[in-house]
Length: 184
Image (cartoon, rainbow, N blue to C red; front, side):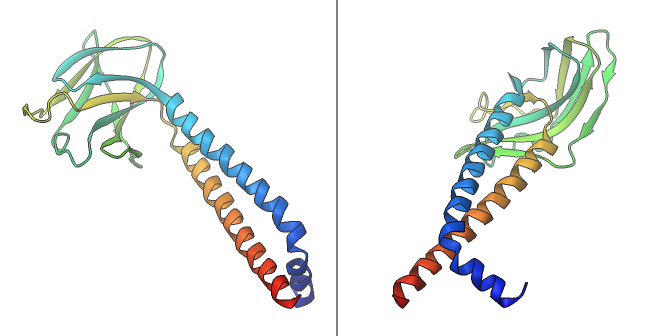
């Protein structure tokens, strides 16, 4: 762009910037709310960490196995998970390429594997390599969620873009108002 056009946009920024700030702030609020709803909506169920247990899936499709525990726990370091149908057939798993991590102040959830559940029903989850320690026992769990990596990435890109627009518009507006105040 040539300089007179940029100067015209800069001079008109008080009229352009305020609606842009409001629109990007609203978009940011919608995107963050959508990301939170997506994360909560993808949760299926949680089971305690045990060597062998029956679990039930109410619908077929892809599911992601997540570990849940205290931050910096090493209890999941040497664990292997296998899922079997009640007839004994093993359900194939795939490691998660992009390990999604959701964390709070003291807890963390990390996606480990995905399974393709062929039909609704009961299955057996087998955990090998489990060490029993008295201090950590009961604080860890296995959570099953619907995979949503692509949607999560789209929300994050939208949040970053709307944040950049909001911050950039706000900075230019403040500079413009500061310049107007100095020149009269």
